[in-house]
Amino acid sequence: MEAFFSAPHGTVLRYVLQEDGKADAELAPRESGNEDTSPLFAIQDAALDFARAYKAGNWGAYGLFKKDFATDALFRLGLTPTSEEASFLGDIIFEYQEATPLAEPSHGLGWYIFHMHQLAADLNVCYWKPAFFTRLAGASVPWWRFLSVAKSVARH
Image 1 (cartoon, helix red, strand yellow):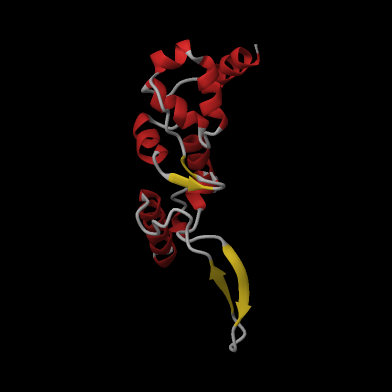
Image 2: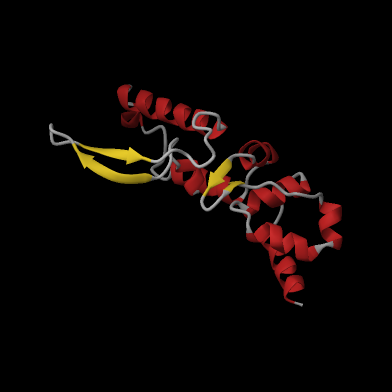
């Protein structure tokens, strides 16, 4: 889930205290260099626009959403993404030690069936395993079962 809340800049190097008493972050450039190209930033902007409109319109007073509405939606997205969500968001680059897509299988399901060791290796570096399996199967699947089979095959 960290990738969905990542900032559109590189690592915070340090904080600098300004004369007016405010602290500003000194930022490193993004490792990949593409500061504004991720579709993730458009999603974040839309979420912030909604939050601002929600607050400005005092919509909370009308009880439109349960208190767990946002967390329930994030859990659902994280654990059982739709094919459309997995395809769109799975290509987003997540930068940790290297720039890697969140959930992008390098081969098709048929290929992986005969190469379980490679499936286990690809899953090892995948940040969003449920979306990886959804993209692989073309639909939301019980990914934890595939994961346990791949791990047991890889151990032998």
